[in-house]
Length: 400
Image (cartoon, rainbow, N blue to C red; front, side, top):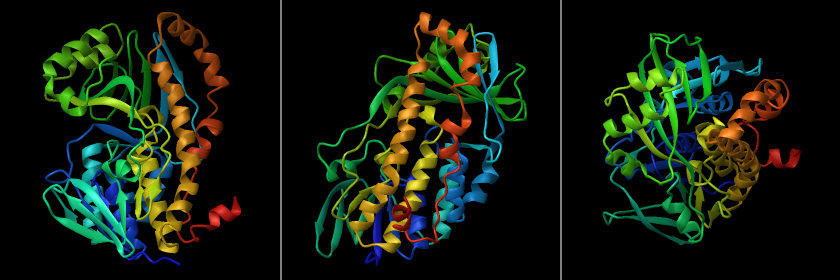
């Protein structure tokens, strides 16, 4: 039986508002503390929400508001040089939903506030004190907050992760910088389709918005690690020059780069992947979302897995006392998220091939599409996953 009545949620990005809303649904008073001076709108570019992520949002009533701002994508293609191949998809699941990250933040924030979740800003976590009665967070402004448990939803550079385990690994750099833009393009681009494009010098993906504009996301190979702040310190004009040189010989990559303006370019910075985190919780503290599992953007599941974990954590705290709830939560989630991360890591290696490997990929791609890229094997277990909110949290472990 649960003994948790109150929770502090550190971080107000995607996982934070979702876990706070789900905790409220579970009867737990949750409050969100965010280091930024306001809701973190305008951070990042577009992202895809898989059917499993939308299904988890449906549990807290946020599925339809997110669908309202999303663009469904029913088809997928892969292009290599002058070859364009249709990728197999699952016929019995809803389509991917493409959303602007800033708009997603706004929707999840508004939904959490409507559910009664309070948000406090300019609250950067400094340290945490635990005792038998609960946990107290101290922030850099000198203020404190206390509750029964503390949830670290503070992203890939998580402070809570380090407090749980000072030796915890940090994120690995994939060797690529991320960018995004929405611009005009005259190229013949299939409607409702996302294309994964292996350009001559770099990978990118793109999809039409249905109004003459096209969204695209370059993954630029870059030996030097650049954080979001460091990457944005470089003028957009300089990045556009590099992108135009990199994608000049690609179709439609060259046109997309030439059409993109400084105002349209969204600089994301280093693309990361989290290695396996040994300790997901300690005492009254637990991690959720990118703070504990962040597969590379190649997975198409990063945000969806964060949403799933947020809902599952709330379900476990509803039914079980901490730290038993945390142990069940980890057992429900670790195998799934690390399996997705492993699959995405393999895809990442293909994004920066040498000339010989690139030529082999072009030759073998048609065969791979018909054999290796089996959607039942690669996407079926991921996209059909559903959380049974009404069932006891530990019932899944008993059935496994």
